Amino acid sequence: MCYNDKASSILFLQQHGMIHAVRRCANNHNMVLSLNNRQDRWRCQHANCGHDIPIRQGTR
Image (cartoon, rainbow, N blue to C red; front, side):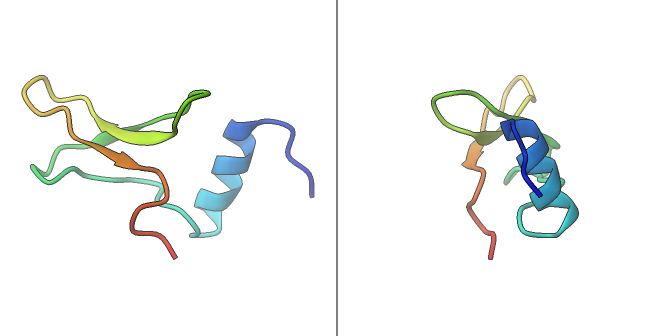
């Protein structure tokens, strides 16, 4: 299986439990996966929070 883009690769890893499909920040807010050319991160979208976590932190 070959994936030609980052989003497809991430989806495959999430479906197979290798990276998180859902994350919550330290303040228990939902986080959104931010994929870009510089660094992929989970980011909290809550106005007063702004936590971010590297995509691979806490994975196997």
